Length: 112
View 1 (cartoon, rainbow, N blue to C red):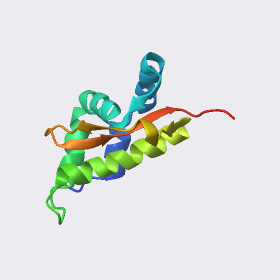
View 2: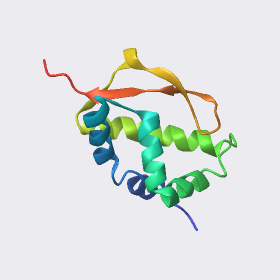
View 3: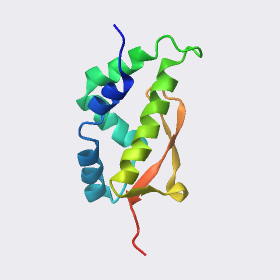
View 4: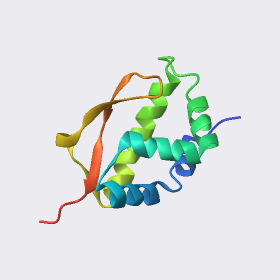
């Protein structure tokens, strides 16, 4: 059965904007990793389906391919929702395997 990645990502991101707003209200910002954790917890089947959709990738790294897709979508959704990346606040976090991963910080756009 072919899996439509766009539809799977849409499902995974069902409440992404709400999660972004909640984290910003509480912390003044959110990170790609904190958002990913919330979405994957809430939409576990979509997350699994997206991983599964990359099982035949040539680089044999469905986890990396999945997270590259999610990261691109986070950026696009965040910008559209009125947030911007702040590279100066980025840190090194860890992925679910404990490997180092850039934790990208997003905050509300600054009005000039």
